[in-house]
Length: 85
Length: 292
Image 1 (cartoon, chains in turn purple, cyan):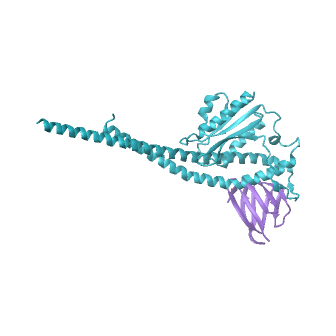
Image 2 (tube, each protein chain N blue to C red):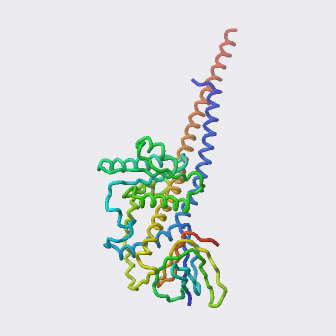
């Protein structure tokens, strides 16, 4: 019941952990990724990633700028050029 | 024959030079470790991006209406050579090796009847390339005002190069930078960056799953290409940083050792002349005593 989530910037691997759900600000709208999501790829707009460690918990937000998100069977990978916070 | 005082002065001056080279060597060693860590940290991003690029480019290959950055302008007449050098010296032959590689490539292209323009990053390449091709140096990107060229600089360079490309100022861009193998070996490399060469498709790309794309594959690829270019230039900046420190460490190690040899030689010479002076003095005293 966990989604493997990685947040990568050119300078370093910011996050690599198992979480419950991540809400990603896609260019065509926000989408939430849970475990077992179908393979998916989207560009992202500048905005906040919301990371839910547990179901119903308060999300942690990370501001990202420029990049894209990829969902594969191994989990969610967000490649962002800039990350604040 | 130098006097004792002169010899002593020379020994002291070589000693202080040795202190400087030794300090620089240790600084370079510490910075090298940092640069290597940065290179290590940048790898996941580059790898993932290359993987995504490969799967997308593989899918869209063979289509004529692909993005301009991928399919090229259809000509290879005008070349832009992006040469990445260091900003500071004291790093052995690194810059001259890089410049030589760039000039050799430029001559090869000119001999083949192509037009060449230079885009210089870093201060140390400017003078020698200007000397060889005074009229070909276009833009110079200054990285000397930041401590450690990072992604922001790579972004600025990539944006400028892409703008030139879209304005139709060149057809092919080549990146000249060193690949850091070890503190002793840095290989100058010439790599094509525009049109973007499709990375080799990873063998595990056939995961079978149908990937959904949002907005569309073309749109994602369009957005991805500049990013890919930025990553490659960022990679070159990281390589140059590591190479600079590695080369500097080796060069300073050699210099320190040479200074040590020189000090030994001078000390022997100093002791000899001192002994000779003492012997002469003694002979004079004895001769004087015998004459009485």
